[in-house]
Amino acid sequence: MEWFGDSGYWLSRLVFQRALAALYLVAFLAAANQFRALIGERGMLPVPEFVARVPWRQAPSVFRWHYSDRFFAAVAWGGVLLSAAMAAGAGDAVPLWTAMLMWAVLWAAYLSIVNVGQTWYAFGWESLLLEAGFLAVFLGNERTAPPVLLLWLLRWLLFRVEFGAGLIKMRGDHCWRDLTCLYYHHETQPMPSPLSWYFHHLPKPLHRVETAANHVAQLAVPIALFTPQPVASVAALVIVATQLWLVVSGNFAWLNWLTIVLALPAVSGTLAAGLLPLPDPPEFAAPPVWYEALVIAVAALVAVLSYWPARNLLSRAQAMNRSFNALHLVNTYGAFGSINRTRREVVVEGTDEPEVTPETVWRGYEFKGKPGEPRRRPPQVAPYHLRLDWLMWFAGISSAYARPWFLPFAERLLENDRATLKLLRSNPFPAQPPTYVRALVYEYRFTSRQERRETGAWWHRTLVGEFLPPVASARDESRT
Image (cartoon, rainbow, N blue to C red; front, side):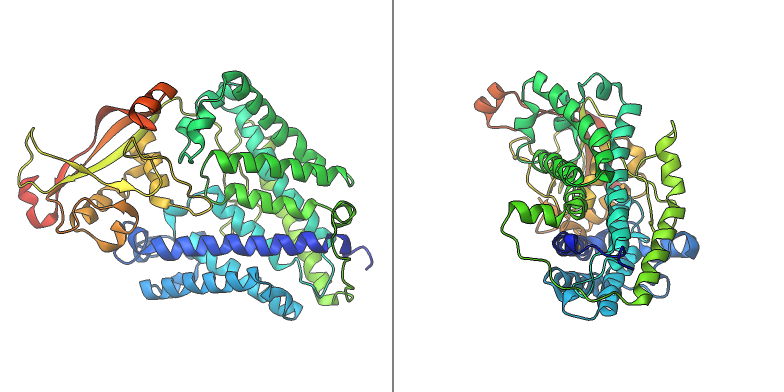
């Protein structure tokens, strides 16, 4: 079938696959480094307890058959190695069926992790990585021209990511409609970046321009992805540019990077070759019949499953970041339908004194990414994902978000649990565990330019109240 492949997109596919593999590597690395404290056998939300109460059909995973921390580590580190190999081009050095199998292993391994990750993995970019990874299985390698149907499915995915995010904003907080949301967003976003302070202090008219440009980029530009070239390529490059703006202004794990990667297959290699000194496309062999049939079947499957996200896009009660099936295929996306006007942070402290009195000296735990010490500049974290830090942001919004895991977190601090302390930037009690741990809520705001010059602080904070009263370890419950 002559229509099946388009050699003009060979370079776009190559870059897409290598970049997607690199993001898989980041995701598996984050899982390997953080799982013991979060979902391990002695974690805050242990996998064995989860799989015992949740049926298979709701969360299929290899960890249904067996779970141990050692086995989880083997899966996660195996994912790191395989994704590194794919990023280096291993998929193009093997037969087509072998490359497809390698991509399928990456997808199945990460699906297994996400489906037992519970609230720690309840982020839209997890489903986005899985959906993109599933499509990558059928995108082929250098043995065959990129399948046209898969290129269109990738555009459909990118469209849902951008258009869904645009609609949820227009249907949500009125500040998106009156162009004032960015008066607050850079300051109240989950994890500010090193440049967020500067973005926050941009003139308000420029914030309004930013907001208006965002609406254009998310509501108008995605439609152009389905137009002929070169318009589709221009639309994809506009999306790349706007995502890079988000990359430098905040830390959103791999969400922005993956959106950039999804835009690449929409860029015509033929058009790029006319502007850049690129090599000619290779000569591709005719695709096997079994491969053509499989790609057509996958396209039909995605078309059927698209009913639910398409209906969601058209609904006034639009949901964001939702999977309609346990395999995370053809999901709905969207972010920041509402914007916080103030930032509340949960600050965790401990003391080694035997009794709590009004004179007790408390020392704070510092997290790797989230704000804590006011003089500490927000770090660059993305595309790496600090799961505990993100959940701490949600805890500052409402204690309900933290109810399942916060007390177990405090208990592990009282034990100086090694795996838990690895998730933190600093431990104020390296010699022996604290006798008590508590948590307070502070309202944070970025300092003004004058305050920054005078104090060197990036943040100013004001105590709001208590989040968790002082608790002692189980070894001395009488103290509480």
